Image (cartoon, rainbow, N blue to C red; front, side):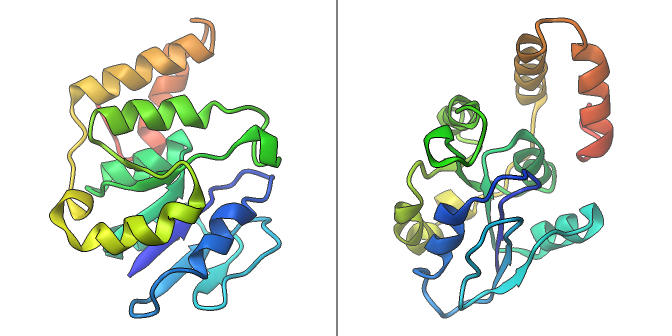
Length: 176
C-alpha cells in the first residue's frame, strides 16, 4: 500500500494530490487530502485522520509519501519508514513560506528521505520504489534528533526550543 499525506495545513496541496492520479494502478493507495479540492480517482481518500489512524497507515504502508512537514516526516521516520517528501511551496499558495524545501533537502542529503521537489516526478520516483534504496527502513539516530533540535531552536530564535523539542518528541514517536 502507498500512503500519501498532505498533513494538517489549512492550505490545499492539489499539486501533490493530482500526482496520485498518475501513479500505477497495481497497488492500493490511501490519500489524506486535507483541504485540497482535488480527490484522486484511484485512491481511497480522506480529508483528515486522527493521529493514531495516521500512524497505523504509516506502519502498514510499503511507501509513505508526505509533504515535507517536520511532524509528518518524523512520524514516518519514527516508524521506520524512509518517506518520499514533496515540499509545499509558497508560490503555489501551499504554505506561508518555503521552509519545507531546505528541511527536505537537508534530510535528503543525509539519506533519510527521498526528495521529490516537483510532484510531476512522483510517478517515476515511486516506479523506482521497487528498489531497496527507496523502500529502505531507517532508524533515526542522535544526529537527526540533534539536527532537528538545532533547526527548531533557530526557527524559534533560541527562545522556546527546549520546550518545543520536548513536546515534539512526546507527540512524534518518543524520540530521545
